[in-house]
Image (cartoon, rainbow, N blue to C red; front, side):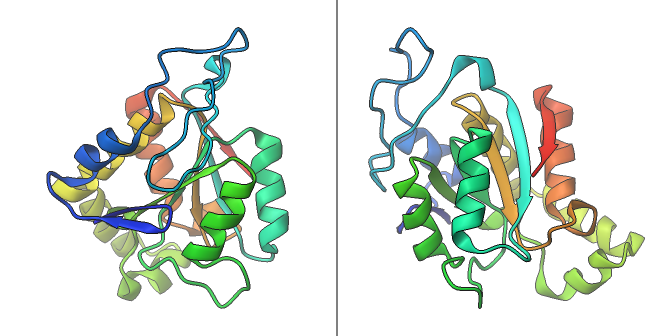
Length: 196
């Protein structure tokens, strides 16, 4: 299931099909390259898409950050869409669970998309954090699965609309599975990756 904003969309045809339904038509643009008031029909979040920043990929961890700090960092970087790659988008930190985070991002004009298919299984996280090669290999299988490949394609599709930030918990991207997601997208989308 792909989750956009606060709504759940059944997987009829998978993540790519769902995103094709919710992505706005950004073919008409202003002189500055941004879309004229485009919104995602499911979460009513304005979508900006400067042409000069397409294919830009960021990764960000919220560890040690408040929700307002995270939103400010993403806004300053010019992020158009946050792709949450947590398996379960909940947090004990105030404002960083899916519903409240989506609302805060929406207030800042940033779209929120949860791609559960890119989540790191719970039993694989500890090994991943300490650099266990087996844990990384297990996660590589997640990315290579049909669901993982489809979700990676969805990230590339979103990047064509504007800058995307991959979100997870860990502040240090080298101890987080989002780095493998970023590497997989970078290698196939000719994108630069910036750690926030």
